Image 1 (spheres, rainbow, N blue to C red):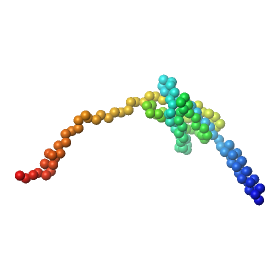
Image 2: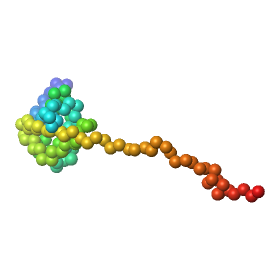
Image 3: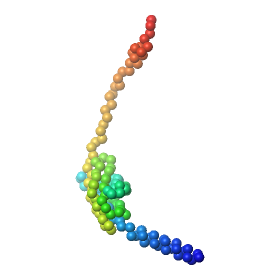
Image 4: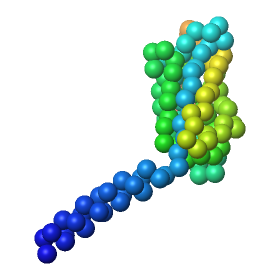
Length: 139
């Protein structure tokens, strides 16, 4: 009886490994550079499936490279973001079965952040005159 249970567990374990190996996947790999050609490290690369809307975030390494493996073949939208740069969106990146799709992505330097001007002097607060109007004193 124990031998049968052990064989069943063994077959289930081996069988699940075979099934996992049969899942069709592809890879998206690439580099992120700025408009001068310098690598952009620590950028967030978001890969979103066009038909599933599932997404995965990966980061570029010190050399500007990123890799996202085990992606279901299909169309993806790839977004790259990093402070100081304009967000880049590639809408039609196709990942193919058992292939590494290469993406060379270029970020543009973003606009300087908007500034808010604060006046140096606040308007005088004339609380007493408001109180006098609301509560006149009879003398």
